[in-house]
Image 1 (spheres, rainbow, N blue to C red):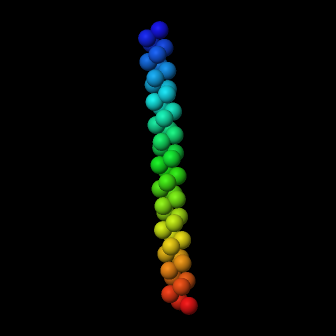
Image 2 (cartoon, one colour):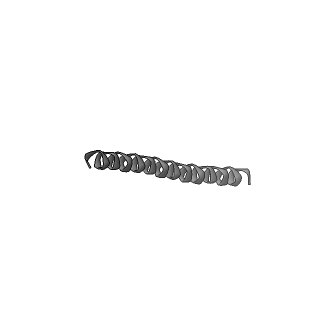
Image 3 (cartoon, rainbow, N blue to C red):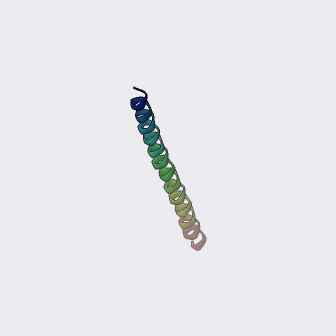
Length: 48
């Protein structure tokens, strides 16, 4: 029984770690995207 609980806890922690990792990657990607859009807009509006 204890072995089953430990394995279940481990898989739950692994799932949470994976979900948090994907969320982190998503936010990093979003941040890079917004920064690049901002720079592109700055370049476009400086030329005109």
